[in-house]
Image 1 (cartoon, rainbow, N blue to C red):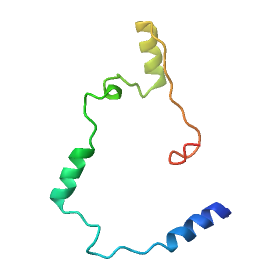
Image 2: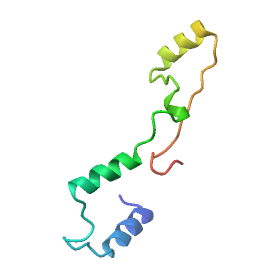
Image 3: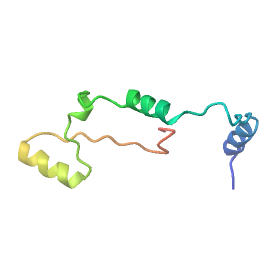
Length: 82
């Protein structure tokens, strides 16, 4: 059963005008240029961290290197960040 917020969301999208077929399109070259511009540099600090996906791998590395574990956890829908 849908709740009221879901119905409101659906109703709000139903009032949006549909784009015409000739507007809002990108050529392949425009897309490639935009894609290159939006890529994060490999030198940004978060890309230099040796992230672990597995908690067990992180725990083993933590013990062997005598370093703490930093855990980033979220609850709820990833788009809502509740």
